[in-house]
Image (tube, rainbow, N blue to C red; front, side, top):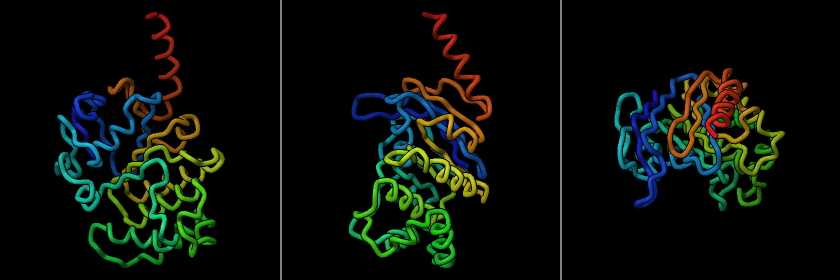
Length: 238
């Protein structure tokens, strides 16, 4: 289980995340939403070690992760799939998937072929283009490849920052269904996404970030009502 307790993080002397707490349990999807600039990506980066927290704790199965290097955190079983389709452009699609094996916690390469076939079943375009360089894929196809590489690594916790980035919105349900099935195998999945209405049916819980702080958390099924109530409260306050 991932636990984040009273986390603070930013860039240099500029604070962005202030006192954020959350948890993600095995088998569930936690949806994180909020306006652009709310601090969602900063939060993901701080959890995964890409920017050092200035306060608070990040725990994976009770073990502290804050302050560790990203590669150490990844080896511990937490993986971040960044927006912008981060893949190895000079490697083939297949070799990109093979890179995920190196991040498996046990270092065990057994099951790689089966995992690849699962990826190809969800994203058949990757099978079709398995010999092509990743640089020659479209942005959406690179995002699929990044998710596939993470799946091969079999992390305990997956952080997925804006999976719709660079994708035709029609492809988002396919990716979310893939994440739903993945979560049901026992992985804790945290998804940052702008398209809340599309994502909610696949999520278990929702957390809304506003100005670097948690505004509220709720069951995903209640998010629409909570957002509407929050908007009314803000209108009255003005």
